[in-house]
Image (cartoon, rainbow, N blue to C red; front, side, top):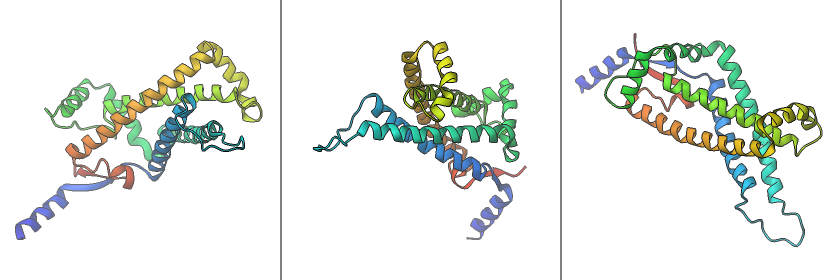
Length: 233
């Protein structure tokens, strides 16, 4: 019992809890996650309806319209979350560690050590920021895809809603549509990017569990509590 207590005291001296993610980061993460799930389900229904509304004598079972409305609502929620996160990354005072991660992208040694860590043949490298180079590039790719989805989604939006915001954005979105090659190409790109985000989500969940198991620093806990465990310097 005495030895166990001594071990606990030693661990307390060796490990400290640090803030990894701010509350603003955590909120936008989960809002973005829920939006992606809803948008994926409703988007696939819009493309290929897979539900049959209850039979009714009155022509009021507008399931396609219902799915489209939820798709649009959560589309604008996702736009808000992405824009807010982009602002935090570029200007947030509590997000210096995110920006600092860019330094490691230019360091080949960090890349080699990080790949070795994922292959279970080396220790995790000491990082300049909160993300390792592979994470940083994966997140950068995700946001490129999200901005692509937002632009193509707005192009499709202005072809359905011609008043208000739709009318305001129509000329700009129409110009981008022409550059892309027409509405058919816009739909194809929107669909391909959706699959890209889905693959990212699967990889993201896998790597989060991987880091939680092998990193033993509370990697999964951090996105809920914001806190992560680190060895004291």
